Length: 383
Image (cartoon, rainbow, N blue to C red; front, side, top):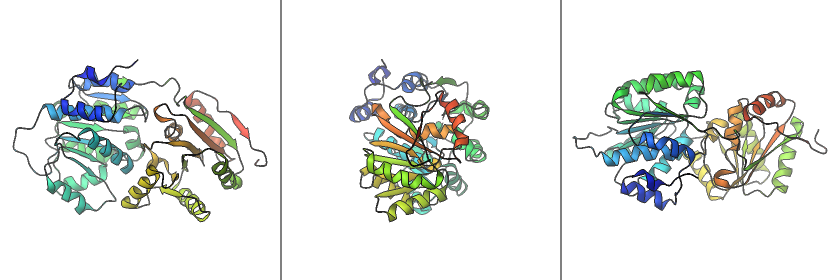
């Protein structure tokens, strides 16, 4: 039994927001990490997506900013806290959660992302002093180099999904950003990652000061509330099988993953042509269009989303009943992340993976990573 937020002695304005959101019990990562981070310690946390880690670091940041109002003279573009995320979607998700938690305060949250008009974002900084910046690394560096944002006074640095920042080649950018900020002894730094590779731990050693390490080890890497199926199917028959599943399964919302942008685009065009209500998320689409598509999916106006791993990482949408792996991911971590889109917060979910001759190569690694054998189903008339 986890304990409630009332045990934490949070600032009343923050507690009011938590109550308004209906959060009562802490999740395991929140219970383990908050007692340290609220006391001012640096922390590195290993937790999968969907564990409540975003709220854990936001509660730490917001509580600290509210309890220590800035008495000094303030300057435009000078942030008090910085949260770095690898993808635009994850940054928008963090921004949305931050706005919910700062609802009853006058803290100002600004999000800086590539793919969005630079001047529009600049206008956000002109409007009022900024307290919390949520950013992707490339766009943040643009703002810092143009002297629109100053990081030399940040009190809090949060690096989310450090493993994904590594995979995407963002570490040189993050290193530059860290150099613009105060020394690690003079700021509080939190870092979260789904995996603790040698490289991630090496970065933690460089960027964090005497950190506490918190690991949430799931019983199984994958959620017990997700029923996992693997259908053996010839590559040429995948689309036909997909149509059958969309027709026969009790689908509320479904996320379909493919490994490459061109596969996502092709699948989107095909389904759209066949009259399905479908949206897509991949790096090639302009940010305003991505946001619109994500909203259409969240509201249920369209109930099928096709995504790449990078775009789909960190997206939290309620009511996703099914995840379909049109292609098996090349990285076993991505399998865990994909199926984590369904079966969230105690709901039941179904994950269906298509296994053709091209995908079979990845299955052993996935089974090793999740610590279980996946049952294979031979589909009548498909292989």
